[in-house]
Image 1 (tube, helix red, strand yellow):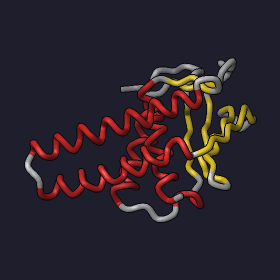
Image 2 (cartoon, one colour):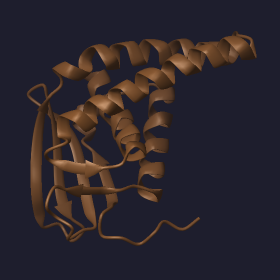
Image 3 (cartoon, helix red, strand yellow):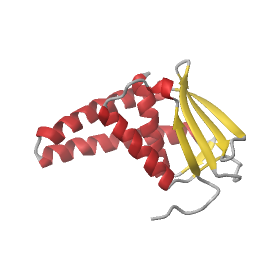
Length: 160
């Protein structure tokens, strides 16, 4: 399936390697899938700007989340810096349930795996909603884009 061509989208997403540290194989897999899915299909634009497509660099700086948005050609659009405090409990719980999920895949029954996966998806949705709320006056994106961005933020936050 070819992604629709629109200016209100991300065409590049990078994570600051210094912010990531050494994630586990499971975390690295989640990151790779989130970036791939995000680039395949997303809706994203800074408020008041339709002159995309855009490139997004995500990093941590002094314990804060940095979202650096540029035009595809590298021209600066905007940088948003957010406190990670509203995400800490969600991310901690999310990684705890992810660990349980990955362990369950190896040893649990299908019903047990499904129960853990439902809890994991619920936390993921909560994190996505928190991200959407925190950025509602700054960036416009759909819920699927928010979910994928939350995954990437979780990877950075996990190390931080």
